[in-house]
Image (cartoon, rainbow, N blue to C red; front, side, top):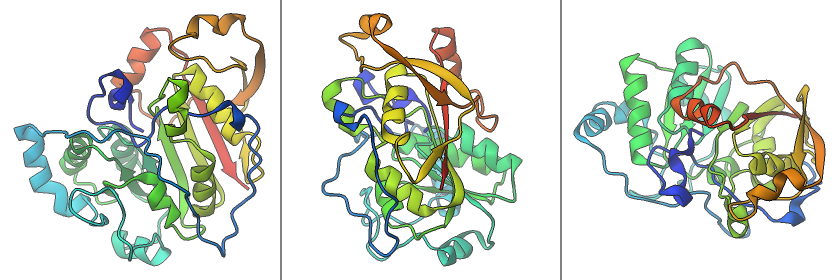
Length: 301
């Protein structure tokens, strides 16, 4: 989410997303079962999908933080400066009602970058609640500034590691999850850092209502293959894409990208561009560079 301003592998700039590049060939046919809602989601070890960097705020963003943090930034952190979530917190329907004072649908964006998408959506859909997950200070400040200028009251921000938040979500509390342009982590040894992983898919499925959606977008062909490998074989999600896309079936990274055209290809189902995603400068630059945007829509069974 949420653009490649966050690529730590590319002199990562601030305002990124909670999503970044990795995975092993062994994830090719993921057949994870739906989570048992009576059991907590467990993560054997924490693999961060981002590199924590100090994001100094300029005077304008510092003023935005000072002005709007009490309105938009949720106090969910275990300690000051920590991206871990408080032990005593859970994402429940009661918490949603207490936070937004209503029972409207909840959309969560993982890695909101500078907030272009989620702020635009919140302005257009006042009867929907939006929760922005972003770890970098400048991105959080930009999002607060955009929301504050429009006096939005249906948006909140959490500076929290996304997998931890979803691990503490009650079943059927979220209507949609967005992950737009996560960091691709192009090196094979870093693929385990990519935000789209089986453990997160399990946690998101548990949090989604029946028929809820996980929307994903990337401009990296290898990440598109990674998403298909993680998601298409699952029994708890349905790929409802309506267009056919041909992708190489072998992973390509910085070292062998030129080999992609000669690799075996296969057809995959993907979605048309999500109309609810604004065309940011990042996406425009990707299109101008000749990159293809891959959109995915996975529906919770």
